[in-house]
Length: 231
Image 1 (tube, rainbow, N blue to C red):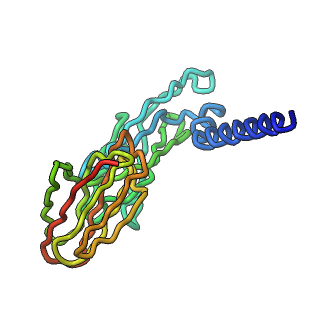
Image 2 (cartoon, helix red, strand yellow):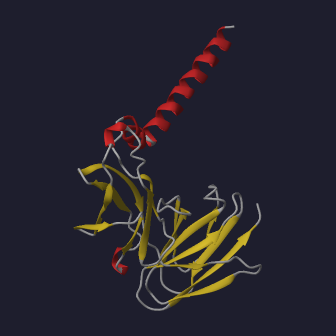
Image 3 (cartoon, rainbow, N blue to C red):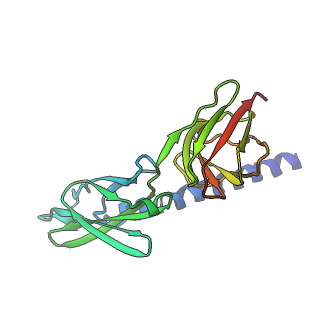
């Protein structure tokens, strides 16, 4: 009986922790809803879908309460940082394209959208996003070779949890980073120095989809040999 009560307490505590995490994750939306701030809804910035841009979309506030009687949306202020410099833009639509210079790819941006009303700016919402120039990496039976010109490269690939993936640079040294698709969060890093390195995939990714960041340590051309094996 005592162990059953302890288990119930632990389950209740876990439920509270999960609820708090959910509330914290959506605190901005909850705040905007509770205080009727006229913030844009559903702000979404693309995560690596485009090489040289971040596509930002959102929905218009409803302005149905008496608080906004006789008021209307004029447009939206969009703000973000590119490197050390703050950037702002005004748009009358519910979407905006942020152009990203090549040196600022693979960097997470915080993008804020603020509604501009006839009565002034009221409420904002934000999301993070990034631009990424990728190629597709496949795993054919017998392995394959991927030429690399010396600069780092990003790939999109499918990996299956429990399978072993092997890779090696033909010359020189370098490293390989694995990130779940739509994120820049590294879940595994391996150094490949002219010898075969392996990783038994222990992450699910996003539907088994991953970004792979290949970083050669020398500027000269090389190639990355890849292969896989079942569990």
